[in-house]
Length: 134
Image 1: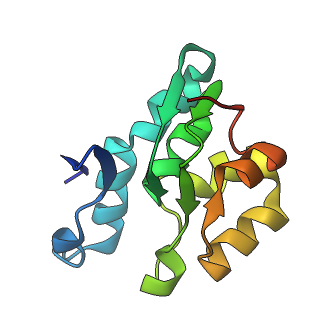
Image 2: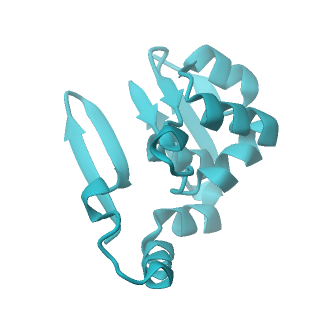
């Protein structure tokens, strides 16, 4: 219950453990568990204290959680995607709140519906990230 953290090939990934989906018989209990364990709650309450330094693939929760932070910095090769809709899900790690705060509802909807890859240059222009640094 909660989030899985993996690091491989210099990448960081945080997101729901897909093997847990459907394992809770009571959907309201499953929702309560997710809400209680959601790191987005802590990030949102003290956003100005957090700076995220991103690189590589920031997919799903990899951008949903950093988007809560007061400052988000990315390397030039960083890219962003919200693939959840293709899996029948929503950006459930907080992206339905954090990303619209940065880039607006329309752009967030477009990212989520298309699942398109957004490069760091466009992310900076839109305000999804605050700076691009090597």
